[in-house]
Image 1: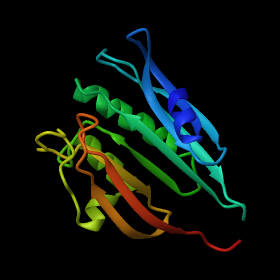
Image 2 (image 1 turned 90 degrees about the horizontal axis):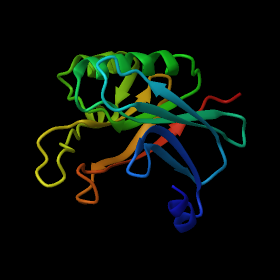
Image 3 (image 1 turned 120 degrees about the horizontal axis):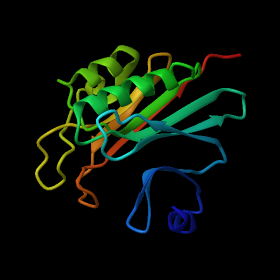
Image 4 (image 1 turned 30 degrees about the vertical axis):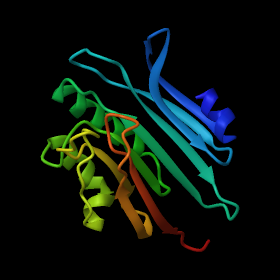
Length: 184
């Protein structure tokens, strides 16, 4: 993260999930502005790798607040993904301001965990009619990466696309949205 900080001149945050290869593995966030960061561990009832949820809270100049969260759910066990999804809901239900949640969820829209999130959040690609596969980057066959918006966001989708880069084993998602805040 600190190498990215030097390259981008942005503010870094790292939510460690596990020790890995003489370092750590987890979620990272880079922001242009200083924000309040939080990290939450996620459950792994079936064992396997630890997981985390990283959050950033930003207060705009007019006092409105927006939060951003990212995660990478278990790739091995559906029971872990379900428990992690329920824990994320428990954490995010406490956030009253507009929220964006994204990441590698390791489930498809047919999975129970997807439907649990869809009860409280808007699947941006689905609502935009642009549900492209994101995994794998070399032969995309499934959509397991998502950008979710809390249902209390008033928004206009400018663009959402799956980028054709192979820097990872996933295709990156890029969304440009305009968020409207009610006047105080």
